[in-house]
Image (cartoon, rainbow over the protein chains, first blue to last red):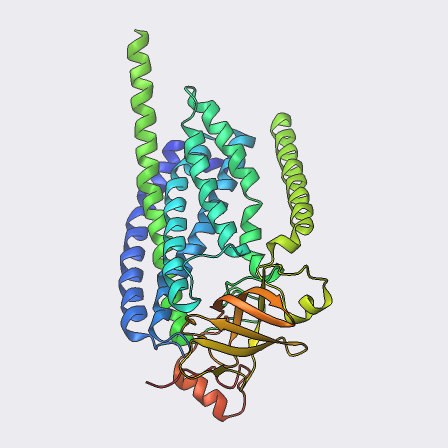
Length: 239
Length: 152
């Protein structure tokens, strides 16, 4: 891991991974959308409304995955002071926030026809809303200081503290009575979802993950470049 | 290197402390976090008069009654131990059917639960209609009798 803390080495890896991430994203999303919207069967209870699941569930997974990535790299930045780790956290935040927003919106659109309500304050929905606010807090805090390194430090601490919320989201449906149903895929006794629906769901999840990697690489390059520009400006101003 | 190790252990310790604090807070507020109570939990707890609460359970088979010419619906909700009669006036969600899990919000008046809102729960099982029907035919169906959709 420490080897990759070198920005040049990290950028080289980014350049290597990027075409693969693009290919996986486009391939998985194209096939995944085709299967989930046209080829997968309607659910026995929810009929065609179940198709929202193929957009909603991977978005919710990515919301938690991105937060975990952000918290871990924030911790690495706090402990070892790696600039690359700090930039990964900064670049992940808006991507994760977008996934969370997508999960909240699609969940709401799914809740109305199935549950009969757009929103309830049950443990799952509330903890995901808190996750969204944690992302927003991280983004705002990062830019709240004139000294960028102080902002990064404050935001990193927030990200690490907020990581408590991730297991709460995951297990909220098991620990408390909720309107949201329990986990269907990631659970001890195997998925409770028929393979004809599980395959498109996993394809979509692969596509979402590829999209995250792709966007992360694009944003990381932008971060490195803006750091370079800032360094040049400072040098010019000092001349 | 020493300082880095110190930071690592400090951050880990702080994180564990936050987790412990969070666990205590969540345990203390459990009553406020649960979205609904089961009929048995409600019967075993002292209720204040007219206290608003959410009641969750399965709609009892054969208990749904609609009075002709009036929007009032009565049905029983059960957790298979205790059964509570519910009266509701309004629009039911599409997933509402006998055997389905529902959450009703309202209050008790004289042993009856008057709901102002009824929400449907759906479980974590996803499968095509044919599979559900095959499971029912082979007797391996674990869900409710009527959980199959009415064929249009």
